[in-house]
Length: 370
Image 1 (cartoon, rainbow, N blue to C red):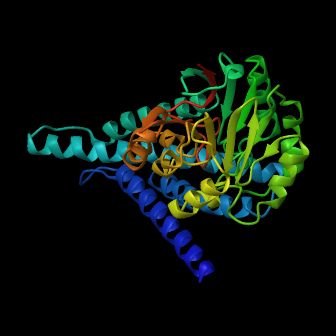
Image 2: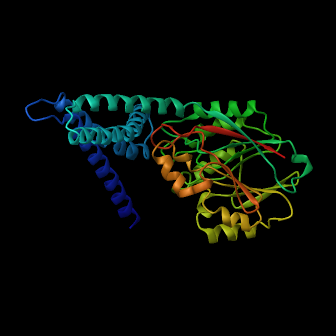
Image 3: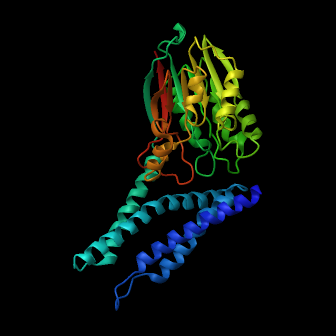
């Protein structure tokens, strides 16, 4: 049954991609009666190949890893991101053409398409550049009953690195160097360190060996680690010296740090049960590490002081960022509050699927506790 659902989902995505590419083809080759649209043959050939590139690359990427496949996957992923901007450029072209026709104005439709497609391409390339420019986001968090030892201390938060066919060990090494430059007292990794594609998990995690902090480095699994059996990822991360939290609480200089992996936090009843089981002391400050900001109300009811999450990518790029805001509301990004608890959701350091960011920035978060 699960296999059938997966096949159905893949077929639906591929069908949608084919329809979008057909729409782009019809837009590019449309011409008034008696005129000739340039490049119709080549447009059909190129768009036909591109329409199946991302699904093909994704299916291969979940089973294999080698340099040619990584190049193919990256190219297909970039194109899929570009497709969003080109689709809206095509829609806008038809809107302009339709308004011009109603107004009785003679316009060169193909010239409109050329200009808007060029703008879409430039926008997409900027998105690729922006996705590789990791920022440091700084924020101050005031927690009630914060132990004196933690006042003025800093913690680094990183999420959604997505090591795989686009980001790899060299990317993680750069992230580690940036984090260590900030000299944090503790480091929190809130899931999706891996993308879930075929990868040498042990080798990819090696840069984490250098990631050290006086009060420890902590990790909780995200959905991409837990698509299936997450043991190879957890072993690799643990072997690198990172403390993997699995439905447990640790105390560091009086601060309670709780980690709940994605699989155990998606259902509100299960999350509540886990938080009851770790015996959280409501009268002392606590931090919950969990991948997605799905049920902050449950964490707040359990007495958590601060929840740290990622997962949303802030939608990664427009228009998906608008959809992410509708789903996660005030918890989609940044520091927010629910009742007595604060939530910080990071936009993540890497990307999933198209390696583009527009309307969101990749980041490492530095939290200062007061």
